[in-house]
Length: 129
Image (cartoon, rainbow, N blue to C red; front, side):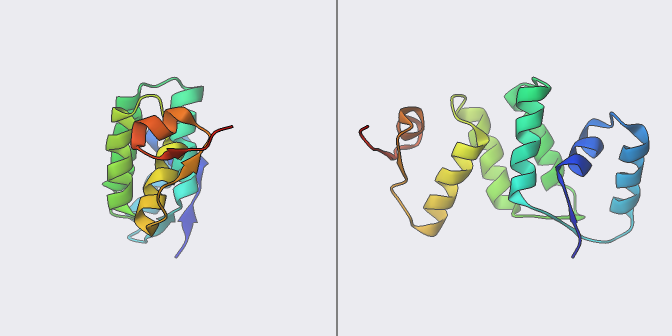
């Protein structure tokens, strides 16, 4: 199954380069499935939040747009939960939330961290240091 990268997702979500957004629309209309890697979505969130300075609700809406697109193959439950948690935990990055969620999914808890914000927000263990 082919996959799409961060730039494809961003051009499609933002439609800031019309010719490229149109090309993505054509891909999506082809009936083919495209893998969306977790790393690509984490990068999308970073660009929307840090570069374009969109609010968390807008970023979460962008994630939900990707989730709701049938042509994209990704872990919809994981990203739905992450979108909700991302809005709820404003002091944490999507990467921190992702790591905490994956630790829980794997039964690899607690997630030890030196990040006191992360530990306090999601009941993980902080290492002294």
